[in-house]
Image (cartoon, rainbow, N blue to C red; front, side, top):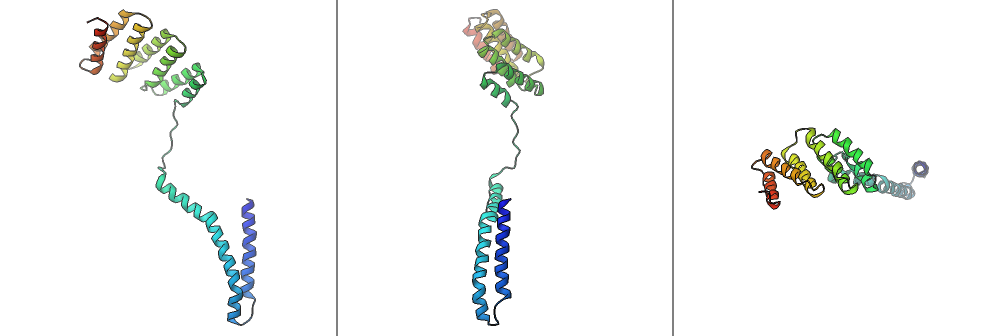
Length: 198
């Protein structure tokens, strides 16, 4: 606000100087031109300063925006708050936010995966992790890759954390039956061979 007041005062002073040189003066055209020249130069310098300070940056901003700016609105990441809570070590809040995202985006497997990971890795509760993955798997019809991921992770948890080889083998056999002739079936078959079940 102050700069506009200063510019207004300077403008009025320069306008008064220019007006006085054009209004006053004698009848001699040469003498009039000589007295008007410094006033016109002063006005020109002031206009140049205003151009450099205000008009040129505005033009540059417009040109830069036209060339570089995509004009797309940046979408907020719904998982940002959950990641922030996780980074702070507030695992319960992180899981609550992930559950909200899972409710809002039912076919997004990431919130379920992250909840199960927190329960397993941070809370050291593989049973809760298994329950979360089972709930996710049974919540609705998943695309093949997502369903296979949940089943594969469940088989791994049963085998490694719960030492429940029978449940692991059952899940791997279900994968072979449900996803025949897919890489998921091939992976389950390979795992069963490693375990000596085939």
